[in-house]
Structures are given as structure tokens and as C-alpha cells.
Image (cartoon, rainbow, N blue to C red; front, side, top):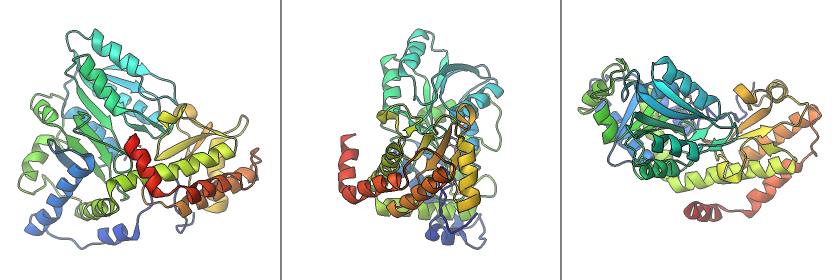
Length: 399
Ligand SMILES: *Cc1c(COP(=O)(O)O)cnc(C)c1O
């Protein structure tokens, strides 16, 4: 596989040169003031990206999966009831983790291609008169199907039921690429990782915790040591870490946040919307459809494209890698073989997306997919030429 071609997998994402240079850094003593000076801005920067002023940020050496585990073990006890929906591989894995931790998991099934089933969440919460449900969990952006769920509406459902459950949100493939508002949406634990919107290598579990979640950690009985928020918050209060910090990644995180803020978060979101829309124009010009069932669900970071009947999504990904040295995402779980995915998040431009669409087209033509040569690329070109970023900012404001 060529390392010159960008990747079009939905994480890990392409690393900007600036971030590759930032993480190429000598060892420094993590008990020195130099480390404190590096670490404190990372913690406050994460809070700005998550849009929380009342909560705290936490950074563990781990990945998104570790952040899932940190979220549940620090806020819940064995036998606690949690409400969670399954509509893709990532929500499925979080459910599996909850079950393995001995939680009583109320699973709401939704078709893969749909998002959070608000009505089912609402009736479960309204029916829970004794408030046995301790946490409501949502995958903000289901990376397996390219489906975005509306977290503000989940908050409304909780409030309408007058339910005190915590709201835990997996934002691994949305945070730093799509609009996320921790305080405004009343999110109690926000979950992210370093290798998607933050454009870094895998290695950091990034979390935001509300005061309610911080209070819950005092009574939560699920076992944890490495991921114990109490140890982390105590050490962080003095700019320290409870064990050896991944300081090169923390340094990279500072630079990533600076890049995002230099561009402006709203511009970052508008760029992702624009790139995603270019991909969607191509998909419809090919005569194909997305796994996501309706436009309100379309993810701005990843598109799962349904392959025509009789064709194989995994074969598409293999061929693109073998012949063109380009990485696309395979279908996972229920949609394995039925879709291929184009990741369009992180450091990406119109031109890179056009190249990716061109590679996808060559691959489909090689495999005799019934598409017209050049059709998707032309549709994306047309969209990119005629839609400037300002127009997309207006879209963002209206949303
Ligand atoms: C990538 C991803 C994860 C898992 O993160 P890892 O860093 O691979 O552990 C969890 N949830 C979502 C939505 C993801 O996209």
C-alpha cells in the first residue's frame, strides 16, 4: 500500500505533517514543570473542543474502547440498569462491554441504517418510575453505518421523562469533526479518541465528564484501577499524571487543538459537511445509495455505501488496496460485504476527496459495478466548484 496516498478509512485518519513533527519529540521528565506546561493546555483545549465549561476533561493512554470502559466503570455499579440502542457495530461493541461488566443492559434494537430510536428511549424512561436506569447511552456517530444521531433530542427525551439518568455519549468518530456541545446537550460523559477528528495516531482516550459524573464516581462500584477517574483527577489537579504519560501524543494533541482552532471549529464542521456532501453527490451519480436511511441521519465523517446486489463490498476494499494502494473501509457485522465505507474526516481537502472518489470509481469499473465512468467524480467536482465554504457555514448556522 502506498504511503503517499491518503487513507479513506474512518480512522485512524491522515496525519498532517505538522502533527507528525509535533510528536517527534525528545523524552522529557514527566515530573518536571516542562510537562505541566505541556499538559495543562491539552486539558483545557479538550474542554473547548467538547464545549464544556462546567465539566472536566480527562486523557488516558488508551483508545476509544478504553474510554468506553472508563466511562462505565467510573460511574456505574454491578447490576445497574443502563439503556442503550444497537444500530451498528460500534454500539454493538459497547453493549457487549456493558454486559461483560455485569450491568443490566436494556438493549433497544434499531435497523442498521437508522439512528437512535427516540420513541423507544422515551417509553423506557417514562416507564421507569423508580429510576432504576442509571445511564442512557448513545453512539453519536455510528461509524459502521455512517449514521449520525441527534443528541439534543435524547436530552429532551430525558428531560421530558423527568429522568435523572446520566447521558453517556460515544463521540469517537464525531468529536472534533462534527458539532458537539457537551454542556448544552447535558452530556455527562463524552468519549473520544486521538486517531479520528484529532488527526493523531491511536493512543489517547479523551473524555469529558460532568459534575454529575464526577459525583457518581464516588459511589460507583465497578472495579477499575488504571482508568480510575479519582486517581487521574487528583494527579491532574497539580498538572501531573498517576503513571507515565504518553507525552509525545499529549504534545501532538496541543498542536491538533491549535490546528482545529486556527481553522475555527465552525469552519472545521463546515468543511466536513462539504466533503461529505461531495461524496454523497458522487454516490447518487453512481446510482448507489447510502446505508443511512435519510438525510437527517447522514454522517459528515463517514459514508457507508450499499453495493449493488450480487457485488461484494469487501472485495471492493481488497481490490482498491491491491491495485491502487488506497484504503477504504469494509462493512462490519450485519452489513459486512453489503457496504464499503469512505471515511472523510480529519485532514482532508476537496482535492483529496476527488482523488479518493476517482480511485473508488476505477475499482468499481474493474469489478464491473454498473456505474458510469467519471460520473461520481464529475458530480463531486460540480458540487465543490459551486459551493463555497461560506454557504456551508450558513447551513451550519441553520441546523
Ligand atoms: C473508532 C470507534 C470506536 C473505537 O475506538 P478505538 O480507538 O478503535 O478503540 C468506538 N466508537 C466509535 C463510534 C468509533 O468510531
